[in-house]
Image (cartoon, rainbow, N blue to C red; front, top):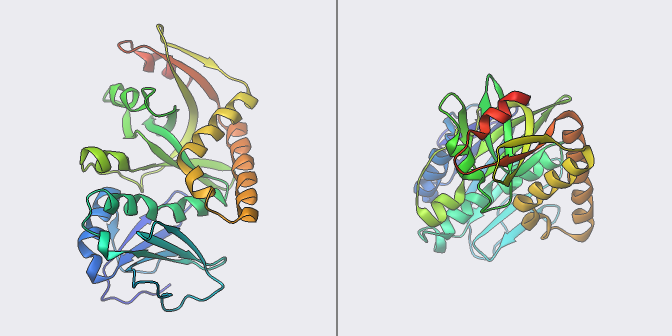
Amino acid sequence: MQQAKQIEQFYLKLSDGSKWGFNSAPELKEWFSIFARIMSLKKDNSDVDYLFNIRPKNGREIPAGVDESWDSFRQSGAYTIWSKKGEKQFLIEINKEFIDHPEIRVINMWSTLKALYKFYAENGGGPVHSGMAALNGKAILIAAPGGTGKSTSIRRLPDYWKKMCDDTTLIVKKDDNFFVHPMPTWSDHLWEHNFTTFDTSRGFPLAAVFFLKQSGTDKVTPISRPEGIQLLLSSVKQVFQTYVDKLKDNEKSEMAMKLFDNTCNIVGKTPCYRLEATLNGDFWEEIEKVL
């Protein structure tokens, strides 16, 4: 897929071998440079497999090259995602009226990835509300609702662990195997203005999923496949349900089935555990015993 050389382009390479390009119009250069830095995207104008064209929104006009066969996903007039089944390009329209708004500009960066999440949800993976860390070349997920201690647990891991992210992880299916990539903690930028970066292209094979529960003891317990499916599906919905809710009714039911099937397959190949963790104990030692 060719792209005009005068437009600056960055890319994200994922574990299934796909190369995702991102470029923007000159009017959005500052916004785009922040997005690319947070994502640790690599600069390259060569061919890519899939392409995000990020452009300023021109009022209510339909963008050039888009017709009634394209689907749109809108959010309060701040941005629109245009996509077409079978098409390998996505058009992201950003309303320039909000480009300097400190919160909305971050929400738009956050929302840009929804098309990426949808693609992988349709292809055996998808996003999970979880932290991610790696040890000896393999990754674990620590999943829990917000405020349960997921981020704190990731931060408390010893330095010999690679701490990749603490909020959202993207699961990518390659053949019959599952790999995971860290995604940004956009809420840090939204509320704390803590402009951290994430090595989103660095993927690891998924070794296990741990569902966190605060406790007075540090303990890891295997859980059944049905419970694992229920808990993992809940973690998927925590990060992706707002997108699913805005799909058309027929697409909504299809996506719900996809997410359920994906979760069943992931749990079928990945050990799942209940992680009971104290505030001060060495809970990671319990994790390491089962890896």
